Each structure stands twice: as structure tokens, then as C-alpha cells.
Image (cartoon, rainbow, N blue to C red):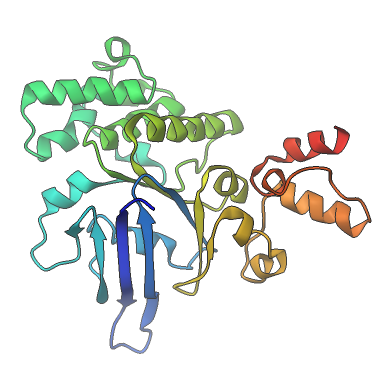
Length: 287
């Protein structure tokens, strides 16, 4: 197995510590993600997903425990913010709301400039990052980001993270608020970025279809803890458990289970039932 890129040990984050309404948003969580692996974190709203991933690039400091990314302890006292940002890139929900510069070029260049990168190298990185998100440099670099379409704004915002060449890419609900076509475009983009850069990817999502289709492994959170972990096949095999913690399973899996309860066995492999889309399952039924 490849070397671990992310190592989280006994991580706890407590809000309002010592007060009557003290809350353990993350409660003694430990896990590892291998270099180049694509892992997803799922859980109902308030389960601790976003709080957890904000520790991975130093946005939050834990109450206890540690996080190591690419050999750098990002939770250590005095940890260099620049070193952490070089390791981990974070794409938040609605990242286009964070665009603020006069041109797309300046927005994408903002991160590398703060890392102290030389100007000629910054231009190389901006060209590279815009290429990764399929925005033509000559067409978009000098345009105002506020003149772009919604989908183009999101691509430009993601390019700003990629320009820092992170070894780990964290995506917190990256398709939130998108129409179906833009949703699929962003997913395809994530797959393409991983293929071209070899980065480790950690996805936070409520969409079980996306998680099943993309992930090597899945971590399920509830009440601040990881309550289930494994491959999509392993995690989504127990539908009752997933429903019991306020989640579901991929639609193809739910469809196959519905047919099974009616005495019909879907003629498709286990991987199709778990990782495939609903149309894959329907196709298997008629094959």
C-alpha cells in the first residue's frame, strides 16, 4: 500500500469548551488516507464533516489530537501556514463567492503570490491551473471574474486553489447549487485533475451516487465520530444502517434492493449495483 498522505490521530474539536453548551464537533477521530487515494466523507448535517476537514489545512486547531499531511504536522504549535498551504488545497462550498480581484489572472495568482512564488513562475502556474479547469488562458485571464457564468466562476475559483499545486485536494460539497450538467462537469473535472496531477483527494458530499462512483474508500460520520469506513461496496451494503443515521445509499443500490424485495434479481455485478448510476442498473436489467 502507498505511504499515508494524511494521518489523523485521536482528533477532537470542542466548541464552547467548559460551558454548559459544550459540543464535541469532532470526537476522537482517527484515520489515514494513502498517497494518491480518493476518499470521501459522508454524514448528515451537523455530523462534523466540515469541522474535520478544516483541520487538514490548519484553518482550525484541535482541542486534542494531531493531523499530519505529507509529513507535516499541521496541528503542531508554530506550524508554518505557508508549508501547510503548499500541502493542502481546500475548495469550499460556493467557492465563486470568494472571487474578489479585478481579473481572473489576479484571482488565480493570489495564492501563489502569498506563497512567495516569483512572478514568472506565477504566470506559469496560472496558465497551468486555468488549463486544468478547461478555461482558455488567452480568453479568460484578463476578464473580470464577475463577468463569467456561474459555472465559469466556480472553475476559476478552483483554479486559484490548483495554482498552489497542492499535494492534497479537499473538496467540501464542490457541486452544491449546480444544475445537473454543471454538476457532472465538475465531477468530470475532479477526475481529470486527479489523473493529471496525481494528487490525493478528499471529498465531502451528501450525494451518495457521486461518492460511490468516485471513491476508493468512504468514511461515514455521525455525532462527530467515524462510525463506518470501507470501500463503497462495504459501506453501502448495509442500507438499514445508512438510513438509520439519516443517510441513504446510491440509487442503483436502492433500485436493486427494491427489485430483490419483489423477487427479482438484477443481473449485474456487485460493483455496478454500488458504484453505477441508476441508468446503469436499468441497463443491466434489460441486458
